[in-house]
Length: 275
Image (cartoon, rainbow, N blue to C red; front, side, top):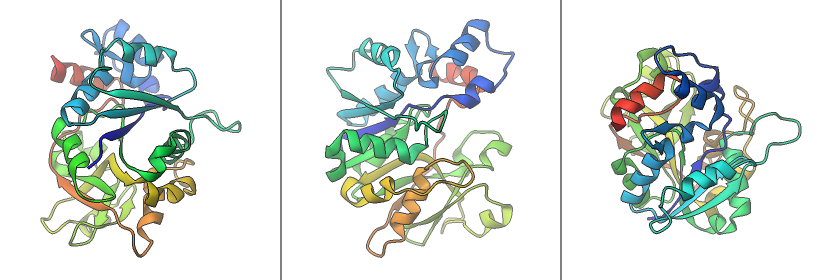
C-alpha cells in the first residue's frame, strides 16, 4: 500500500491545441489553446480539481505534480483549491533537452521526478496522467493492492470511446495469472484476437501504475527511446523490467470508463459528467 502518487502534467497538450470543435464556445476554445489540459475550467474549478478530489477520497496523502519549468499559474491554481489540509503537494520539473522542443516522454518525466525527489528511489508510489479522470475506485485499487509493481488492466469494452479511437489503444499481453508480458502498440485485429485474457476480454492500459522505486529506478532511468514516438515511454521501461527473471508487474483487471481530455471534442463530454 502506498500513499504517494505522481501526476504527469508536463505535456504540451499538442493534440488538444491542434484539434477543432465548433460545438464549444470561444472562451472554452481559448482556454484549450492556451492552458495545460488539466487547468481547463469546468464551472469554477480546473479539471485537475476533480482528479485530486478522487485522489483524496482514495486515501492518498502525498501528490507530486510533474510540471514544466513555467508552472507558476499551475501552482497558484492548486493553492487556491484548498487541498493543503488534505494533501501534501510537491512539484518536480521535467526539463526539456536542448535538442528537443517538447518533453522527452513519460519515462523521462518519472526519472526526473525520482532524481529530484530521491525518497521515491526507495519507496512505493503510483503514477497517473493529469488529463484522465480516474475514479475513486480505480485510484484506491492501484493504491491498496499488495503487489510491488502493478498496472490497472482495463476491459476495453468498458471504455466509452469511439470504436476507431479505442481500437488504437495499446493492449496488455498477460499470462493466465495476469502477470504482464508486453504492451502491444497499434495492435492489429489478429494481435487482439491472440491476446484475450482468460475471461475473453481485451485489456488495455490507461496509464495508471504502481512502482517499487528500488526495483524500477534503473529501468526507468535507462529507458530506450520508443521508435514510434521518439520519446522515452514508461511501457518501454516496464517491458525491460519485467524481462528480469525476478521482477514482474501484475495486471489488475478493472471494468469502468475513464473520462479524459485529449481533444476539444472531449470538453463538452467532461462538462456533462461534472454538472
